[in-house]
Image (tube, rainbow, N blue to C red; front, side, top):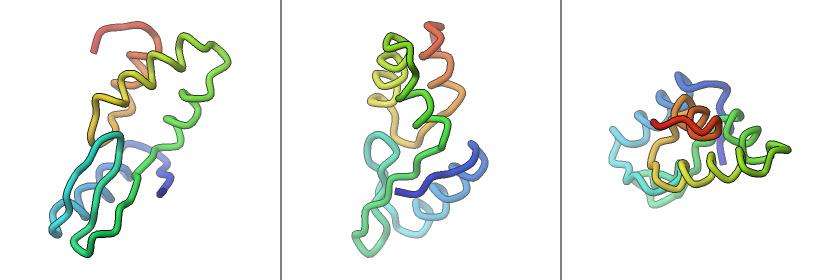
Length: 84
């Protein structure tokens, strides 16, 4: 797992692997051209998943399960209960 600071770093790493023969998978996972799997995980995702409000954490998790590359803003909207 690679923890990223923000969306820009997440995008940069994801795009670098994908553009060099990578294969995107679910929930932030991507396989590089050599078959090594990486999970590109923004630190904000970990905060949302461990939110003391279990409903917020559940909504964020449900949204993440529908993603390939993690979209921090979409996860925050989902955690807040807003439509994407």
